[in-house]
Amino acid sequence: MYNMGRKGIHYLQKLNAANVPAALIENGQNRVIDASLTLIRERAKLKGELVRALGGAKASSSLLGVPLGHNSSFLQGPAFAPPRIREAIWCGSTNATTEVGKELNDPRVLTDVGDVPVQEIRDCGVDDDRLMNIISESVKIVMEEDPLRPLVLGGDHSISFPVVRAVSEKLGGPVDILHLDAHPDIYHAFEGNKYSHASSFARIMEGGYARRLLQVGIRSITSEGREQGKRFGVEQYEMRTFSRDRQVLENLKLGDGVKGVYISLDVDCLDPAFAPGVSHIEPGGLSFRDVLNILHNLQADVVGADVVEFNPQRDTVDGMTAMVAAKLVRELTAMISK
Image (cartoon, rainbow, N blue to C red; front, side):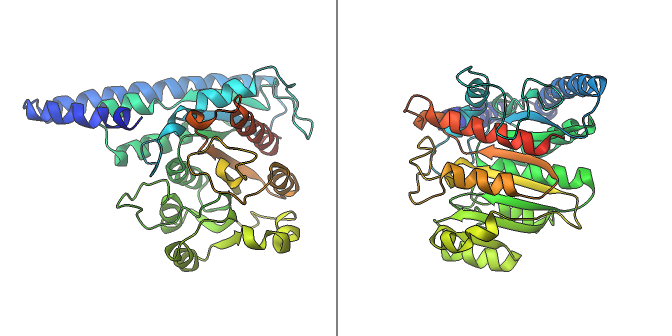
């Protein structure tokens, strides 16, 4: 996957070495970007029209895949996750009803607008600054089709920055964020990469896109992670005190006074006994029911969410982690749709 991730950059370097005019390269990149956004726009428009025609939906979850893995600091396998999650959602081993009774077969509950073609865009030599803008624009396109709300399938955790930025900008103000993860992902620029999956929440907080950031499930945190948390006023709940904090976390009320609540769910928040198919295996995490108890009891208007860092290349136990990720998506769908 690393070699795939570098392919577009190497291709652009060859073109530059061959003295291909910069304007020609840029025009080609713009055409690919426009085509990519057009496909998402038309799919979102179609799904939005369908939901509105059926009536009765104030908010409807819409899947958007962002198969990005090159900002991972260890393994790039999360780029392959969106199709595996979709396959698990609809595989037929379980029914289409969520635990709270929402029917996923109802398009007023769940639609799908496809994937941002990340690799195709990068193959044209598009850098991460522009790529992050493309991801943000894709999310905004989904949100333009009322009542669709984005439920994003990662990808590594770097995608949360452009997604949250888009949600905040589109709604016109900051959101509260519930972030479940083994790691705080708040380094200033991990290994020199400002878009690292370990730096996404530093970008979010710097941009003023979140009023409150609650991080739950943390059990791998450095001194910089704690210092950055203090700098940005982050509420960090570490696993070593989870038994003490459980009552608070299972009775959260968020979003009053802001534009809504965003949920970012890194699959490695779970103990690897429940989800071994992740890049960064960190023992001592949340049980699956711990996570669902937190989600099901949350009082909030959920305006968007992501499920990230599932790595199919490490999902060697009969696709178990794919089913775990799919179940998380299903329950988030029920929280968003109304």
